[in-house]
Image (cartoon, rainbow, N blue to C red; front, side, top):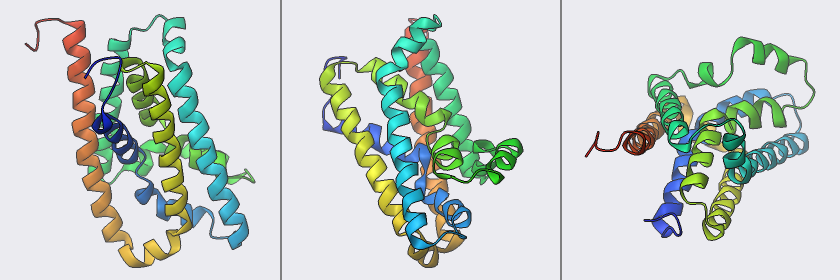
Length: 215
C-alpha cells in the first residue's frame, strides 16, 4: 500500500479499528442506564444526537487533524507512537474490564449529572469519540491523505455511526439476549484486536523515526 491509494481491505481495517476502539456493544449498558428515565421517542433522539456528534467529531479529525499537528509542530511519526500507546492502553483496559473508568472520570460523571442532554456529553465525547478514536483517525488521514482515501474514510465513518445508531436502537433487546457476560466477552475480543492495531501504529512510528532500528 502507498500514500495515494488503499485497497478495500485498508478501508475495512480502518472501520474495524474504529469499531474496536469505540466498542459500541460495550457502551450499550451505559446507554441503557443513562437513558432509562427517557421515553422511547426521547431515547431515540439521544441516540441520533450522539451518533451525529460522533460522525462530526471524527470527520473534523479526519480533515483538520494534520493541520492541527502542523500548528503545534508535532510530527506524524511522533503522533503515531503516542496514538499507538494510547490505543494499547485502552485495549488493556478493555481486556481487564476497566474501560469505563478510563473513558470517563469522576469529575466528568458529576458534570454529566447536571446536564439535560447526554447525547453529546458524555455519550459522543468522551465515551465514543474519545482520544483513541480521534488519534486513530488522524493517523490514518495523514498516512493515506489523498482525496480518494479521505472520501472513503468519510464514508467509513458515516457507516460506522449508522451501525452504532442501529445497535443503540436495538440496545434493550441486545442486553436481554447477550447479558452482561456476553457483552464482557465481546469487549475483551475487541480489546485484543485493538491491541494489535495499536502495536502496528507504534512499530510504524518507530520505524520512520529510527530508520534501521526495526529492520
